[in-house]
Length: 200
Image (cartoon, rainbow, N blue to C red; front, side, top):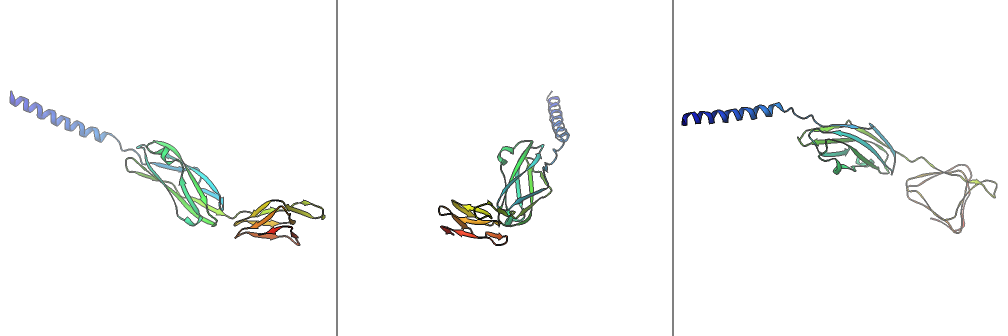
């Protein structure tokens, strides 16, 4: 009787091991995360902010998302909703890019890792930072018979901006005009700048 019980126990143990081993091999591996950017390019003006979205699918659940920029001189990039996406199977990440005053190009790459330690990445998103277009300063025809711009309050031009002046500029007694470092002023023809108070 003991011999039969021992044989039955051995068969039960071997059968359990075979069953467990066969079950684990039946489960297919989950696919690596896929990452798709809504756009492959992002163009913005210096000293501004723009966003781009990235669709993510991770069958094993999103573990981490990172965004890297290969040219830190042109700006910074951050994922604004990263915490909301962790452990989700699908989601849309929002990337916020903030440009500096430096013009140029760079590449943003997004890397997603899942809970199975697999990774997926985007093709680079090409970022181009351009200069501000000139700001036009040109008023209506005034008492002098020419175009006039009247500055009647504290006004600052710049920094790092270009102003295209096409009219006479009058800084009135109650106003002031401050030109910040890095400001460019382009003047068309003969332009009168009259300061009744102060020009800084």
